[in-house]
Amino acid sequence: MKDIGNSYFSIIVDESRDVSTKEQLAIAVRYVDKLGQVIERFIGIKHVTSTNAVTLKAAIEDILAKHSLSIQMIRGQGYDGASNMRGEFHGLKALILNDNPQAFYVHCFAHQLQLCLVAVAKNHWQVKHLFEFTSRIINTIGASCKRSDTLKSIQHDKVLLHLKNGNLISGKGLNQETNLQKSSDTRWSSHFHSLISLMRMYASVIEVLEIVKEEGVHDQQSVEAGVLIDIMESFDFIFTMHLMIDILGITNELSQSLQRKDQDIENAMKLVQVSKQRLQLLRENGWNALLAEVTCFCGVFEVVVPNMNETYRTRRRAVRRGEEITNLHHYRADLFYTVVDMKLQELNNRFSESSTELLLCVSCLNPSDSFHAYDEGKLICLAELYPSDFSIIEVVALKSQLSTYIIDMQTSEEFSSLRSIVDLAKQIVKFKKNDVYPLVYRLITLALTLPVATATVERAFSSMKIIKHRLRSRMGDDWLNDCLVPYIEKDVFDLIPNEDVIQYYQKMQNRLIKL
Image (cartoon, rainbow, N blue to C red):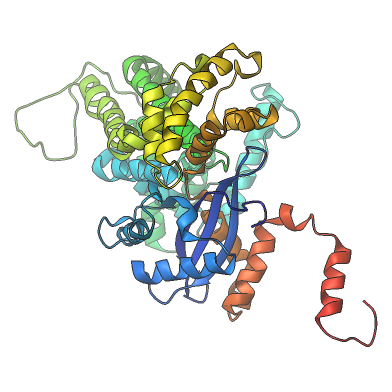
């Protein structure tokens, strides 16, 4: 709170159920400190009896009031896409905007990216089948400790054999023991890591399934293992697995970048555009490389590769009888092009905010390529979106200040190699240009305050499962909050000397001994 002072901040909010089935609301604040650095801090968690917008707003106000923060200083709201959060008329976003029209709402970028994946998985039957069977394979292997240990043992022997034959490189941190990773719709990047682990342990997984098929205690287990082996040894499964690994590999980098605490919204939109460009390049130039990779993989594990010029045979009933297609058309047009196009379309639909006036104006602050994106008119418009922060006189003064600012920036060596607004803010403070151009720096601060992702509060819920678990399910709400804050913000609490803590307890009441 001391660090924020009277500065602007944004709130990042999410809700989750704890181990005792209580609905908990977590809140974090995002602000720019005195060094020009973007900071996100978890400030508290509060039990709510209802998830309607009115109750959530009251809980947020209580937490902010506890820390002497005013709702009028909020300059951004970051939530997921739930209707009670982002509703246009009765959602939490709308209620806060009624009190403070400058608290602009940003839908969590990482959540939107995850929704893109879920949409593709639900709308394309082969991708849907891939994730369904991958989940069944992982559940079958992980159903018993014996199977998991067998998988690790087989994989360990294969790694030793490959090392002996020189097929793998040895070194510190390489060839670590691994296992199949489960995926979840709510865990970012989990699908990518799940497919990677399955591909790396492909032969070992089939061996374990063969054991289950032969030694299954129940007939159902043997039949299930046999079905999964047939699926894994099909060209369709291997092709779709490699395709989704390529696509998710592109978006996984974006997902990891979006979860950084110091990520700014303009750079996030740039990363989204880069991902779109990479997907477009994959569509235009990636077919031959993908087919060669899949063919090589099938050759290693003796999986039959269909002749691409032959007629494609499907087990499904043809929609239009008498219409035959080749294998090449099916795998390239119906699968490869279609899935990539669906992913691109979802990215375009989900990240439509890039065309909004706010983000178009913010993008003009980008310092890359010698401030190539600079546009004085749009920056004036950006200031006008914040009438409480820029008076009419200050808007007029800003125009003159911007003219001097851009000449100074473009002719100064210290600002020539900057890549993002975050770097710009740090450099401005370092060279004390924030005192020279206070109105411009205020604009930069407002832009950086806008939230990008809800990763900070998502991590808080992960910590909550460690603090409040099955054996501590009765701990009170205040005690949970007081344990969570120091646990999550360790770097802040590590700065408090032990002597200060001792003196604090010493003065709480009269004691017979000195602590």
